[in-house]
Length: 89
Image (cartoon, rainbow, N blue to C red; front, side):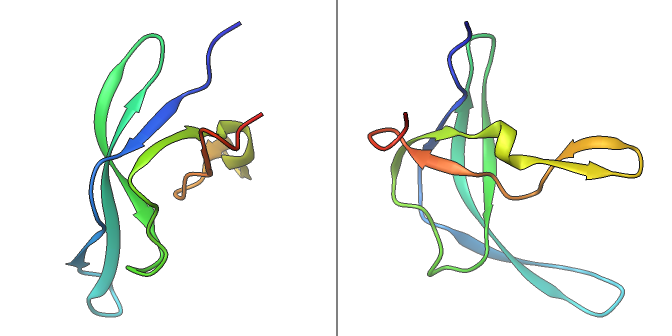
């Protein structure tokens, strides 16, 4: 049985502006590291606002909670469902 994917939040959320057809939109991301048995990579975890950011530390990614149906088949949602390591079952 594989271990669940671990996400380590490494810093505070930062905002940036992206262009959209309706004008600029502000998005927020926190620097993080994703680690599985087969890989380790740096990524940005999307959050709704600076107030909604995750605390620094380790989380388990509930991948199954993030699977969404689309017309083209199952895909992962943009937001990651993170469970603090001490709370995970």
